[in-house]
Image 1 (tube, rainbow, N blue to C red):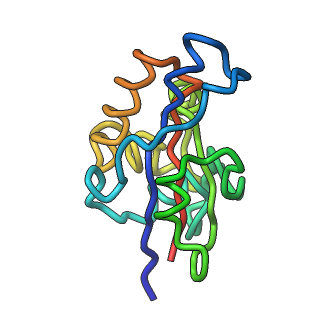
Image 2 (spheres, rainbow, N blue to C red; image 1 turned 135 degrees about the vertical axis):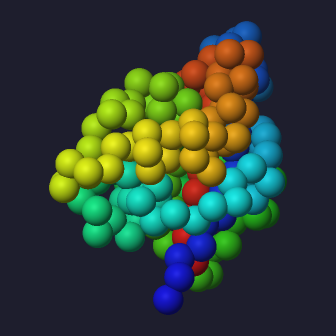
Length: 146
């Protein structure tokens, strides 16, 4: 049985201007993951989110759940019924990650599984751009699996 991923990039443009606690600093939907990531390589899902992690990666963002402050567009897109493994990761966390860290066998790096040169590259480009505009902590990718 295959595993499919869904998700969305969100950003919080007001947080950079007024601070993250300001009432106008809400999360806004950026772009659906479907438009950016055409791949479904399990090593990428494993190293990023701990899903199908037979590789033994230390996941960056496993099992955090659905963010309570999600944008309305994300709430509308979220497949609550059958979804599992819901989690999120900020651009700040991704930018700070050790992309040379390997899986349990030492054969696969995080960069090789989900780096700029993989199907994840366009996702990171969008998040990097939004992070430069709005701050790395104010950009996140929210994902869930079927």
